[in-house]
Structures are given as C-alpha cells and as structure tokens.
Length: 190
Image 1 (cartoon, rainbow, N blue to C red):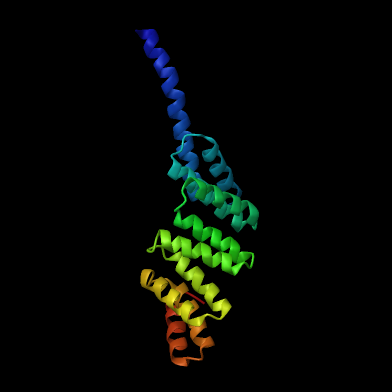
Image 2 (cartoon, helix red, strand yellow; image 1 turned 90 degrees about the horizontal axis):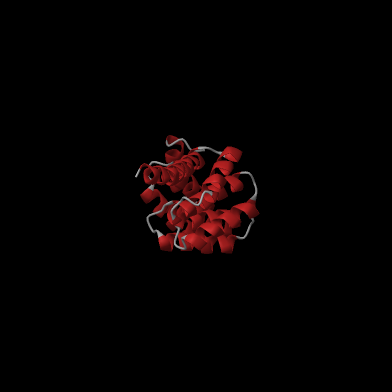
C-alpha cells in the first residue's frame, strides 16, 4: 500500500508543481511587460497546462508585447494563434486591427474592429480605435458615432472626448470642439 501511495505522489506532485509554474508564468505574463512578459507568456504557452481560454489569452498578451516592441509580424502571428483557439475573442480581433492600423491597412483594421464589436458589443476599445480610422478617412459622422459609443461605455476616460473634439474641429463646429476639448483636459487628456 505504501508503494502505491508513493507512486501516486510521484505522479501527482510533478504535475501539480508544473501546473503551479504554468499559473505563475500566466500571472507574470499578465503583469509584466517587455521581454520578461514575452518569456513568461512563452513558458506558459509551452507548459501544456493551460485551458484553451488561458492559452488564447497568453497568445494575445504576448502579441501585445510584440506589438509594443514594433515586432508587428510576430504580434500578428500570436493574434492569429489566439483566434485559431478562440475565434470569437473580441480582444484579439481588436488587437489584430491595431496591427493593421499601424501598417496603414485601414480597411483591414476596420474589418477587425467590426468583428471585435460583433463578438462583444460591450467592449469599448474597438469603437474608439475604429473612430480614429474613420476620422483619418474623413468619415466624420461614422467617427462621431463610434466616439459616442466609446464615451457611453467609458465616460470617465479622456480618449473619446479628445478624439471627438478633433472631428468637431474638422467639421468646423467650434462650440462642440471647445466642449469636448475642455472635457478631454478635465480627464487628463491632451
């Protein structure tokens, strides 16, 4: 009987330790940044101990770190992996849209933001990101609609007001420009 218990412990303990290590790397990936985060994400991905949801999260998070380092192709590969695992992952679609935006592929970025919104209409970031592109493309009414949606979801953040003030300025509406610029500054924006 002791031999059976010893054998069971020798199987359970390494698996438990391995799972704890994977969870630790998962947490580090979520909390750290730069090369340290990329290394932690990679270890967590390679551990084989993550759920499908957590695995998709790790690919997405590592993609964010690659994007911040300017490694856009590596970021895109990680977002693609996240979406292979979890096709309706709104955050990964939004992040893939950000890469297309940085590459100047605005129509592809809009398609990703559309998909993100379709998958999670209550996720505010793709509205703000898509609004920025509509503004660049001169689609001011679409930009305002998206900034409005963003502001509705994130009324205490400056980004929506700052962006919308630029559109009002382009539309030559001085009163609305001034109101949004004021709110932007009150919330710490520039």
